[in-house]
Image 1: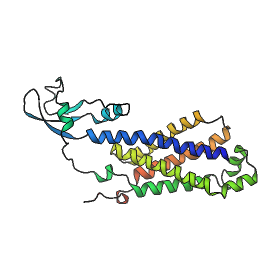
Image 2: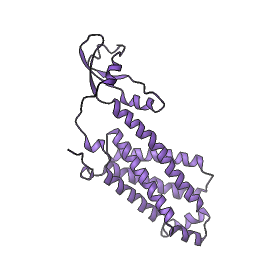
Image 3: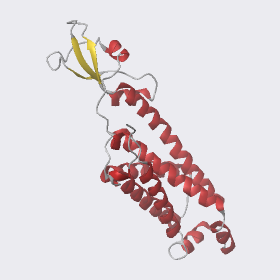
Image 4: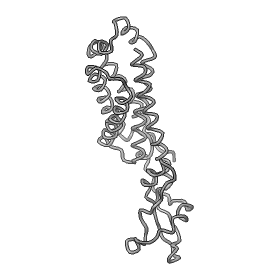
Length: 243
């Protein structure tokens, strides 16, 4: 039973660790995105430029963001300029772009529904009708210990928290990329599942193949289900932007 608790706590901690740099990178990306009107140092005429926001977000995670222009109204004729306008572009506020409420905001209702679906899937997967007997045997639990685990609140609360953290993580990543679709949700969810699985495998003591297949199969299906729901939920379920 302690193995299960520690595994779930490690899973939740890994999710939080992965989410923190993602949120920080999203903040950097938002800071440097968008077109900006500046005065070109060479011609003293107005030009419109934009930063390579993805590069700034990636480099900003390790320290100072490295800024380069992605576009300029004087390009491609003057694409070899020294980009001396960068300091001014940093000071200038970006031009307002048309809002994309469905893409820029986290869809809370689909996220909550996905977390609930993943948790229900876990309950069914580890029920007495599916894998409970083999799962408890792989953990080395007695019948009484398995009964106590099922009727204890702690593991259920931990699994609910893990499902919520994972689902909100996929929601944040979709909001960051600003492209929401079922396929993108599935790809992001499985990518995060692989990363978390790799960290878990590296941190955990060797476990039986039976337990690996049971828990790995559940987490794979739960990640797939979460990505499908969060990424492919109908737009009418999204929380709308305030006017």
